[in-house]
Image 1: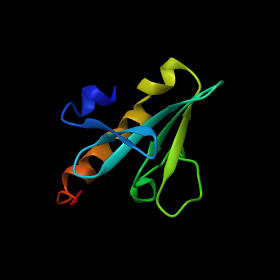
Image 2: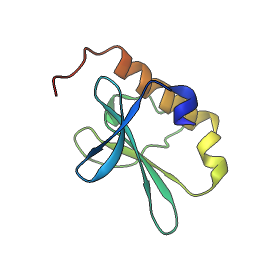
Image 3: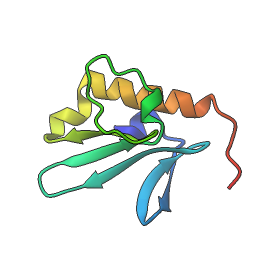
Length: 95
């Protein structure tokens, strides 16, 4: 689904994890025993009317995916689209 929304993102390892990257880090998909977690680098900036986002960090927020259907839920897709739009609106980060 992330590739469908933003095919221009590349995957780069940061801190030992594969991040989808555009002008900056955008999202990370992590696998756990009972769920997958999608981490949003600028999660505190995203609108979340359905309250999918979890976490208390300075910027990072995540969504727990417990079923495959969760990954195509309209509210989740909207979060990914907004995260990608936010990244596209930013100047490229010096690496």
